[in-house]
Length: 271
Image (cartoon, rainbow, N blue to C red; front, side, top):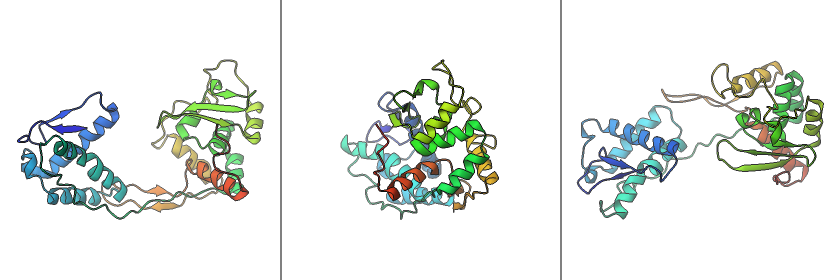
């Protein structure tokens, strides 16, 4: 979060509110501010009151041309970049927010695909024991890939048939009932008496991205199982990314879909 120092101050001369928000969020705000300043060129030290709607339109068009999605651009401009100007108005440093008249972009939300029960079986058949367990956990708990791969035996209560873990992305503590099929797999493994021992030792501590990362490893399992990932969106522009229609995260959607088709509520397994 950045705020202007005075009515005559420039957006470049802002004060950082350390401690008010998380450090990662603060750095994101600073990155967006710096990118906007670069887009202003020689006007980077312009007075706050001289920044107008056209400046934001040009910055938004620049982000779109780089390949960012409309959702991302709206997040960067209408929420993050608008924040200091909204605060400046509240503090009486500006008469009005120049971003108030900027309309949202049309959404092009990417829908993730799901796996069929037959495809799940194919994936499990081609996976090694650690990946087999990771796929079952992902499918029956909806946990994210890195959270699954970093699970320890201390997260598993086989007596109460519960898995409890803290989501790395949100920090939320999650408790999920262990599905009988997952329970059978866990009981077939060498159960460790050390609560700090990883469930899936060959996967623990690895990064999610990159050619040697977890996501690519799962993609290779999909290829071996002849389960197509599909393409949800092709990359465009320097900052654009291609998205696969199906990935490890699709396991979550797959189980929820299976529950819905069976007439069960989607949250029936969560505690």
